[in-house]
Image 1: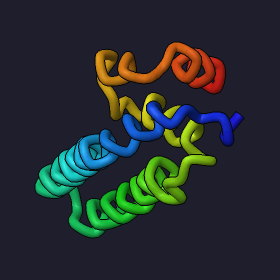
Image 2: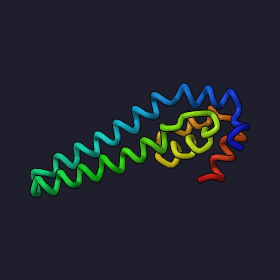
Image 3: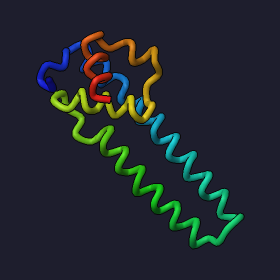
Image 4: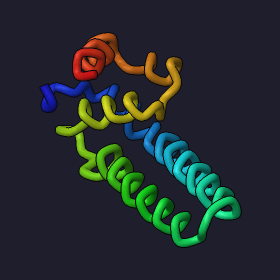
Length: 107
């Protein structure tokens, strides 16, 4: 399956990588901001621990979605992007029907 990822879909995935990464980072930073803003309502050490856990969990999400970015992992990458809402429906529709069906089955 992973070796059969169509060339046109690989080009599409590669071109969308910066946008998907920016979306994920924007979300992570917004959530970190929420944690920081709540620090005024509770003790700062607790906020620090919450922020630490958030960054750790977020780093794992970034790794799953963007590390090992190679064609043999493309279906898994695309499935992870979908699972993390990093593409709009219109952007996902740019992939071939076969790829969209396989990603649907993976999810």
